[in-house]
Image (cartoon, rainbow, N blue to C red; front, side, top):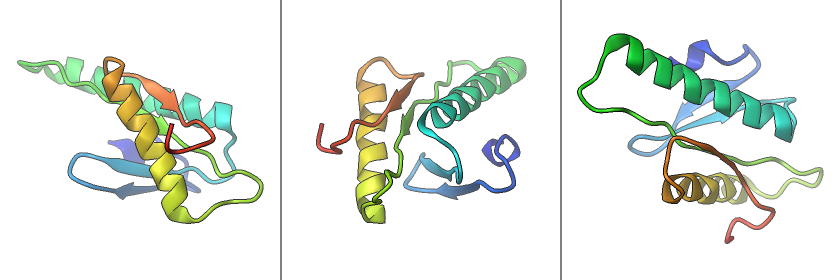
Amino acid sequence: MVSHEVRTTDTVYHYGWEESVVLARETGPRESCDLAERLRARIEGHVDAHGSAEPITASFGVSFVPPEPPDALTIIASADAALYRSKSQGRDRVTPATADPRD
């Protein structure tokens, strides 16, 4: 479902057990958060349309590549930290990364 919501220049990767990564090329911080919110709403709408005994939520952590990009593992760690902040703040939300992935 996620791969149908991204542009042809974007790439979706499965990462971990229930996680995915969307590499959104040529996309700024605001647009990246907007994309994550659209994906979150699409997942919510898909579940509502098909009925479910339990609600399914989607949490997103959004990381950005700065002008001087760090290595890929740092970028992923930043997004992962943001994802876990989304989950700890009640789930079903989009959380942008901070500058430091340890925050």
